[in-house]
Image 1 (cartoon, one colour):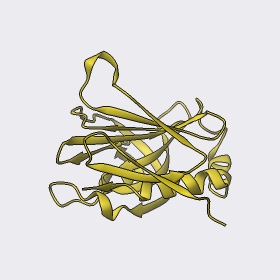
Image 2: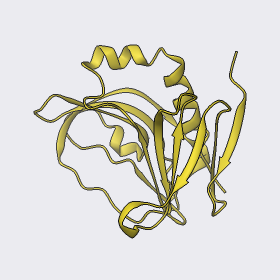
Image 3: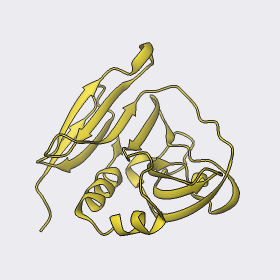
Amino acid sequence: MSPALKTFTFPDGHISFTYPEAWTVRTVLPPDGLAGVEAIVADASGNDLLTLANGVNAGCTGGPVSRQVFDQAAVPGMTAPNGTEPSFGFVAESYGKGDAFFMGLTDPRSLKEGEGVSSWCNLVPTANGGLFTRVHFNDPGFPNKGAAKAWMATDQYAQLKALLLSLNYA
C-alpha cells in the first residue's frame, strides 16, 4: 500500500512535489547569499534525504568520467524553457578514486553511459533560474555498485524516485 502523500510548493509558487506524509520539508536560504530557496526533505526519523534548490543561478562544470546508469525516467512536469524535458536518474560514476553515486533530476545528456562522458550535472533550467536536486548519500554512498542496485529495491528508493518524478513547474 502506498503511503499517504502531502504536497510542498516552493514560496514563489512555481515548483511543487508530493512526498510521504511522515516525511518533513523545511526551507532555508542557500549559503553565502546565493540566489534561491532550498527545500530539505527528511524522513520520519529526521534524517535529511534530499535537497532541492529552486531559483538558483549557478552552472555545472565537469570532467570526463565513466558512467553506469541504474535507472532513469522522464519528468514531464518539469519541461525546461528551451523545451528539454529533464530526466530522473540514478547513476554511478568512476573517475579514478572509486565510484560516486548520484540521484536526482538532470538534463537527459547527463544520462549518457560509457567512458569519457561529462560528469553528472543536477541543475535543470527553469523559467525562474534553475532547480538543483541532490539525494544525500554517505561518502562513499555505497560500498559498491551491487549495494547501490540492491538499495533500488527498498521503500526509501521508491519514495525518493516518486517524489522526484512528481516535480511540477507551474
